[in-house]
Image (cartoon, rainbow, N blue to C red):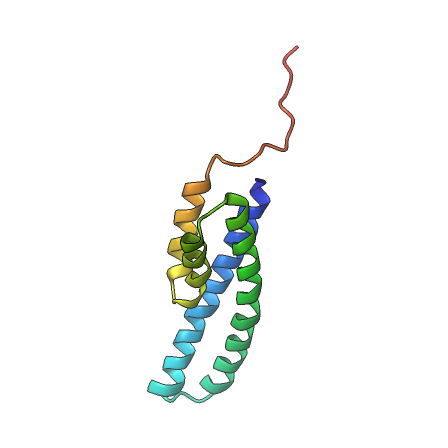
Length: 112
């Protein structure tokens, strides 16, 4: 497995996680604090999170299929993008787990 597969997943996990935290704060601002402008903020962030979550799902599924994860673990990683802050913790655990399992694409230098 190439390291780029994990890198794509990590980037999307962080993006999805940040957007979900922002969406949660926007919903709190909109419904609990009744702040002006929170409605449009929540709409924009919600749409962005929804579309980018689909990209996260594709990259997480790709990583899981290449890492040959069982279905339960795959679902755990896929659902991490729906719980605020969970994507950060799951990404860290997965990154540590998969460390060292990547194919080196750079040639080994030959000593003369």
